[in-house]
Image (tube, rainbow, N blue to C red; front, side, top):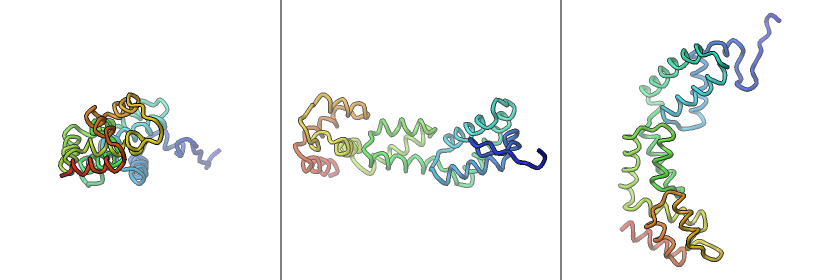
Length: 196
């Protein structure tokens, strides 16, 4: 029918938007994403490319044209300071350390989000400067969250607890140090001694 607008329920786009991805549509998607989530430049690029592929439904030319628009948009956001990979990496690394993630796991997570090697290294170095042994502090938080070692409620299973630390990316040294603590006060004293 003439004058009717059909909206694709999955993508929220009209049929005319689906045929050609306009810069305004990309901008709307990018700003909508950035309103909800912090992002690195590469992660935003990946998110927008996924949206384009979903909405273009096999139109390779539209996807290629949108790729150029996405690169220009991300470049503009970088220049304007709307996206800052250094600040993103530092903030995400601090938050992950506070949640009890090892430096290895933090680095892997940053790499998965598209943060460059230099920015990852700078974020991890900043963590090392704030605490003399950030992995030990994270291991203690991890043990408290998972109720391992001095925070356990049931009988000890040393091998199982070591395996949990290893899967979380901690070295045996940190795992053994936390597991050797008799109670939560001893774990707090271990952390206090590490920060002196």
